[in-house]
Length: 297
Length: 320
Image (tube, rainbow over all chains, first blue to last red; front, side, top):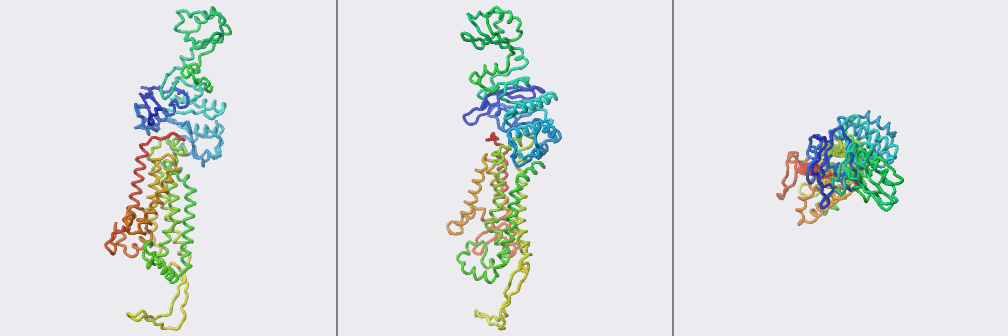
């Protein structure tokens, strides 16, 4: 049985459907990335998993527990970072850590202090006088300073500079290596790609596709220029080659699986300025959201 | 639970300390101000306001005693105002405040039940209300023991029966003696004032918490609670001003909130105080000590329960 499972999970607010019949499975010990633009339903899905809302339809389970009806037990198994993590402004950093680690039986102030030290947080400052990035680091520290087997993070690296992003990804890798299951959403394709085992794409509240990143990493994207007529793709390669973009001079296509046969064919095509690179999550994202190619990388 | 309690104590600390200082200081000064005017002088003044006796919760005859005048201090607008500030500010914060600030989601991301969040706030608010009511009483106690009053002792006179005439038995001038106020006032007589302020606080806090459980904006919860208090006070004024609106007294919490009246019943008829209601001279029924406290505490707890029920079932909106 999957550690996290949703079946036909839906949430509507009046006539607006924020999440529509979303079904997914996350295996224990894996890292699952949720991708999608703003309003795609990522946070709604996460908040339904946390039991903050009643599903309009379907159900969600974590470790066999119903996320809505057994929310308290579910939250004992989960550590959570909201998309917009806000903390009481009048407290000092250390007070906040003490308070939140005290709320959990598996919370560890010592671990939180070590993590804060790693993230170079000044815990003597009041939350109200911290920068947005510092507050986010403090919230991440709270979310990770426990032994919960499932970690759910809604855009954990938002508002952070690249150095801190890397530090936080480092912390997540450490958690992954400890065998924790991680579900996180992000806008940043590269960071999802660097850490996830599986990704899911959401669009307008619907789960469009899920992809296994180990498979995706076997694919390659080829770009080049053509001066004459582009030769037909041989029958033996039609399964493997997929044209992404083509105009009078430029060509982009993707090769799935073993690249050797395709390379032999490529030599005979007369394509110039060939560039071959591993297919990235971006190519999949652009297929799903062609209108959002300007998205942050 | 312990972490939640310390969180709410920390959050409410500043408001509580300000309210505590205000209510204690006010009672010290207000009771002291009673000593500035002797009972005889006060009797002369109050004679001119006989037409307004209906607005007084107790007869003027009781009001001119030191006990009556001290009891009046518990019904001063400032005392009410301080208790309302504390109860509405904490009550409105229970759910709407934390949703409004966006801190609720971070809190409930942990294994903390909604009931725990709600009832921890209840506990802190209720203990704070009891502390404020006790500080009002303590301020009175300190002031009564610190202050003295001047009493005019007239020379002995002979009263002629059936004739409104007093014949002085001496030509000596009246003498003024200074006595401790505690000689005239037993501070334990005012315990009903303490408990009814507490009961009123529980009711207002319960009402504010209930509104807060239905809303996501604290300013709106505060606005509704303040509007409710103003409406209730207006109903009381209307009810005692015009006999045809007298029935409105049944619908305002300012009717059972009657510190002076309860102090009076407590001292005059202790047995009656422990009844739910009492019969007036024209056969009218009035709430007695148990009734006033029971209604305020009962409705306050009912509001709390409705709020808890609503909060445990509602969707948590995302932070704004």
